[in-house]
Amino acid sequence: MRRALSGEGLTPTGFGDLKVFSGSAHVTLTKEIAEFLGIPVGQSRLRRFPDTEVSFQIDENIRGADVFIVQPTCSNVDQHLMELLIMIDAFKRSSAARITAVIPYYGYARQDRKDKPRVPISAKLVANLLSAAGTNRVLTMDLHKAQIQGFFDIPVDHLFAAPVIIDYLGRTDSPKLTIVSPDAGGAERARAYAKRLDAELAVIDKRRTDDGTAEVMNVIGDVAGRTCILQDDIIDTAGTIQKAATALKAAGAGKVLACAVHPVLSGPAIERIQNAPIDQLIVTNTIPLRGEAQQCKKIVVLSVARLLGQAIRSIHEETSVSSLFV
Image (tube, rainbow, N blue to C red; front, side, top):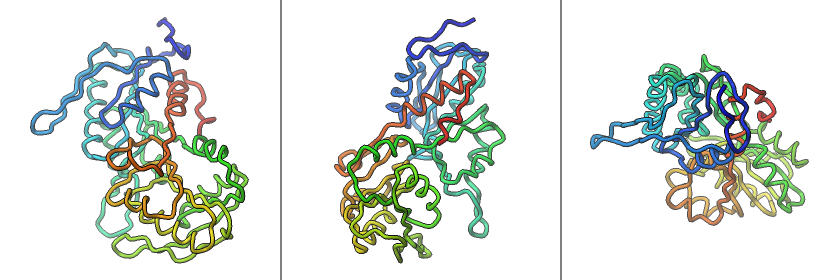
């Protein structure tokens, strides 16, 4: 029987020692998770050859171990995805008992269907690649569409950052609170937030032009004089959030905040956030902030390390993870 690990007193299981390794995408998050679990981050070397090929080597014995690899597939998406696949292959060939890919942000999730002729379903392709590389299970957070879980033939644990965000919002002094979905597709998610915060619900009626630009048409719901919180899963170029916030102000909203789980923040996102009538943008650290985003005073980052750490511990100890799915 293996010795108990320090820190959280992890229970021995049939999968050997728990080991957490990090790709290059988000080393800080991996360190936070490992600190919560009371174990060190696994020793490995991830480098690149001059032609950018990935070089990876594990610097400790992982034979018979329960391995968790933390790697959000954020920008540069292809680079981080390839790193993850190569790391999985290395652990498989080094006789790890089980390999779990911890992907806080699942890249290509927005390409989950054929919405035009002759296009790929890239979210399914990535699922196939992970399985082919040797992944035994996946731990992810706030998929763009929950149905993506069905693309996998291996177990998927799908967490939600809602408890972390709702806890923060619940501690803010915001009377007359209204949760606003920036489009009809996100109404169900916004309704869940509104229910737990005992808030009102509003929806932005939005149409997209052929080039993908978001055009706000109407605000459905009473927002006049209220504190409005725009809620979405991903904030990418921030065009939707900017125009939705402008529409809310035009409809008489007193204060506008925004929250999103995954801060992709590409292109003109930071400039738009700075210029938008948004008092605060609340995001999580599923993706690390880089460049101008780190200097933006409107952005508040909440950590999901504890939530992911709890899930990793439950998976390792073969106990229920369902309590974390709400």
